[in-house]
Length: 314
Image (tube, rainbow, N blue to C red):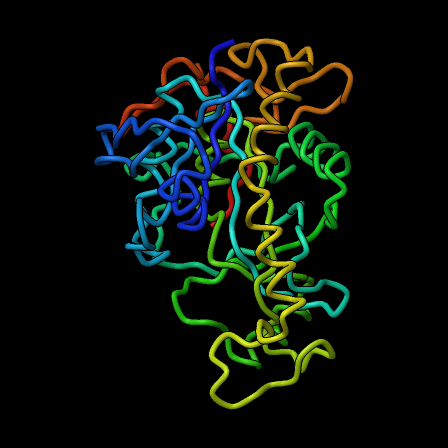
């Protein structure tokens, strides 16, 4: 079966590939109307998937606010990708989430301000609803895979996405907690919004790397401890286990999607009869005319987006 799933992750997954722990082939960057995408790899196996390191191949090379997410998402869409499993680090805000936990996101609080968030920048179109934010069907598949792998995880959480690359101040974290954030990260925005414009099924999993500045009961602040929360060997081991599981999780999700009777994404993206959920409505009217087989050209004035002018999100 043709590969229709991609995993967007940070440098940790590339290092696994570079060390030979993951078998794959380098496809290279792809040219798009929005510039060249990042490096793309095809990870081989019974359930293959594409891999795109969002910060660049090798060590992390790009600040979060400088990632060309439009080129990355456009390239994957142009390759026929229908589902995106996004993966990234996060800091725990609430005290019931620990280092090494995996967290499936349900919603985001966008605190970014420098990132290109739409393909409709030169157009009055693109007023897309943001409910649900992440694909319910794909979230359900991921949850089932994590359960089958017996990995400790939270099936639902709200993430605040800050601009980065700096970490958040204690006052900022208190504010994020007050407005409902449970973890904080630099990843997933604007990818999730761009995926919606391209009618792709997108879901995100965080692996918790540290505790945000909340005076967490898990680890008190120590002067000079830059990231905080990773000095205990048990935490380091749990984190390594979570990161090391990514390729198996992605392969498991790819396999599960092959087994699920998902109807053609070209007719109704993220719609699955058994799940009774459609993850990416394209407008209040339910109109769905953006062809997944033909990603939007820069400055496009597709009629589909014209039906979506009821609601927007900055």
